[in-house]
Image (cartoon, rainbow, N blue to C red; front, side):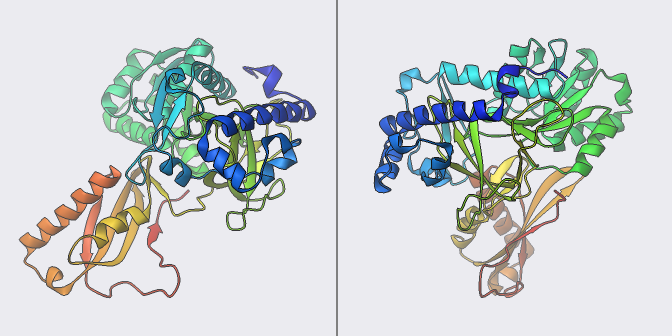
Length: 433
């Protein structure tokens, strides 16, 4: 089995942990010196970066949250002057403003190398033709995979998202061997091929590297059988670097987190206590090499567990299981981050809407959908159909403008939903993850 960077990916744990400590200490000093947010956090808790003398001291450091990034929008978390930042990306704005991330030349080089590791682990070589069906733009996915594949020496087709029939045509004509997309889009491609009467065996496809949304083992089996490929999972988030934080090897027994670049922890999301190896909890990540945008104990909100046993592939880096949900109420729909609280803000601001609603998330023919049922006052509910239709259109437009996702709104009578003394049950997610 090919390993891209054997020196680092197969390190003895003792050597790895010494490297992590040295890099952690350098990161803490850089963050403390150059990022006001970190300086204030450390000072408030009476923490001196010099006091971190072992990896166990990491648990004494404060967490970084999405709220910190929001409050320091756009460049407040950067640890280098803007003139040293060669790339700016952002996540989808979950509170009206996106999360902005920056990269120095060296950050881009390390990022590219991480994707080269991830691709190699999944079976990609310099002989492959890699078709990237992620959208190019502020989203980190497409560019990350693009540069990593080029580092390997593979031929890259920067197709971008959508236009399914053209995707299939290019797969046929350009003899694509690797597909990179969301897993749900891979199913969409399989569906369209079926409709067009195209046999997947007539293609050159061998591998699929899928990420950007949660997906089940059942979905993996379906993709592999319908497209005739080996499908592997990978994990990343823009706040930490983008794709390239972790990825499966062809043994498919968990995603290797590249521990020379990141330190993962698992915490209890309620108590914030660090949990022992093997425990299920919230993943927290500290970056060890990021120059422009260091992240110290970033709370990803993703629920998973870590396995420190050496993998059969020879890599010694810890493996994370597929994410099992989130510790906050965020939903990922068609790759877009959606918080019920965002939708609530829209609803409560509209005259005639009650603050009682339900979000129903579904997946039909591998396409996610969001339907919102909203209680409205009696006069709205009994309006003539034309006025009611215009009212619904207005709500759908306002929600789409805020979250960037098309939704279906249905109006229901007052008191349709049960009332809860505690936290209301707002979301019904019918997807199988």
